[in-house]
Length: 205
Image (cartoon, rainbow, N blue to C red; front, side, top):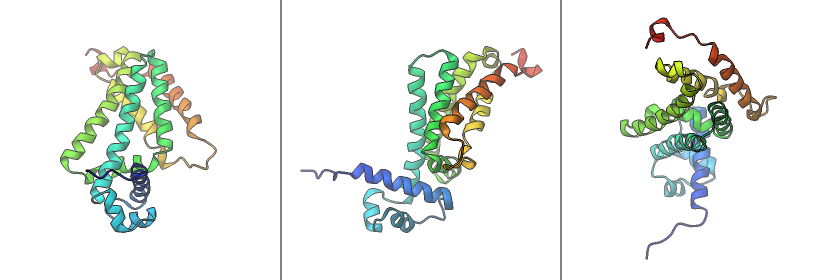
């Protein structure tokens, strides 16, 4: 009879990922050892290997787990079939809220994904592209000329530029929190979207 997992196994795996993400974000993936991860988790190195076979497996799980959560958020919002503006506001709110509790994982995704194998990196990139496509779909609905000129995705990337790097300057103890930031981002983007002039070579596309 197969031996089942002990109670709390999944919770311990998540704890390991959380501590490892903080270490990777602070020191970088190459400079972080499994000994350091084990120490941060209060585990022996042997116990740590019971949950993850090596440091690479930890990296994959942090990066892929984060992007899968983002992909799921996009799917959840799109499934509600909201009008374009409420849909975009909901997406921004969900992403900013997710980043609030995943700053270390997001830094790992943006900075350490280059250490993944081509296969693992491509799989994660496919999810990232799906996330961008979900946002771009809504942006195209808001401004059809952008969609017609094949500019919905580039404009979407400008929006991501506003929210993806908040972890570099927002402080948990700061006066501005993520709940207050999300509507500001949406207002700024939606307010400026109608003012975009199509480049001459795109207006006729």
